[in-house]
Length: 296
Ligand code: G1P
Image (cartoon, rainbow, N blue to C red):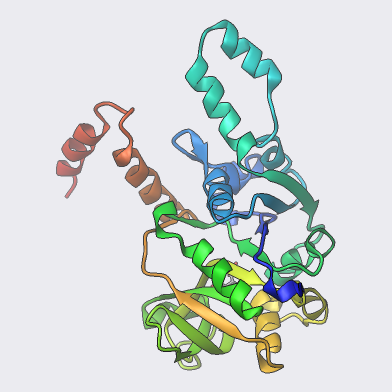
């Protein structure tokens, strides 16, 4: 079977950034391990990959971020301690991340951009299709965005992106796609991609959110990609090169629930939202209502 007709089984999570928006805590704690109550952001991302069928996960990491890999490791010492105390629920909680996926890691070395980080996965992924999940946001598992993208990629053999409408004035923060309809309201053909365009140059207000399913043939293209926006090697540019040379590129329009953790305000909103949905935090919602009433 040709590699283009296989469904992706591997996921790559670029997680080498310095997370300057969260300094000083990110001096010592990777942003990906910031807690959403008692579970780190990264576990939600790995859950999303595993639920879509990608349970081989490569983390592209950096110096000082090895605790991300430790988090998915077994802790027989802690298990024995908890067993002695009869804390079975806690044992289940610490084993959940271990069971999710097989975790691999590679260092990015030098921070040369998202395209460079994804390129570091070449040896691990080979010529298979693979998913890329950026760590700043995760989707509600009920929305099945990634499984849908992986199914579509297995049909086309090309590139599949997740797209979302953003306010026109915000386009310079994102990769932006120009698109043509396909007859399916949720799937578009991508006719052009540009990384962080100015408002005047933007071909639409459809932004790339951090989910991609890519063919292994992108690796040599990434290698040959020159620095672009911000002086960095951009994944967007490599994908647009492939598109221009005939690789089919489709976008799945995302209309579901997305949790943003990429900057402090959004992280805090996500944290509070998740807390309100938990049944084991007695009194939190009542407190939040009372507290909100005291705000102007
Ligand atoms: C990256 C991509 C960009 C995409 C964004 C989604 O940008 O380069 O195309 O829209 O992720 O989060 P970054 O946020 O790393 O600057």
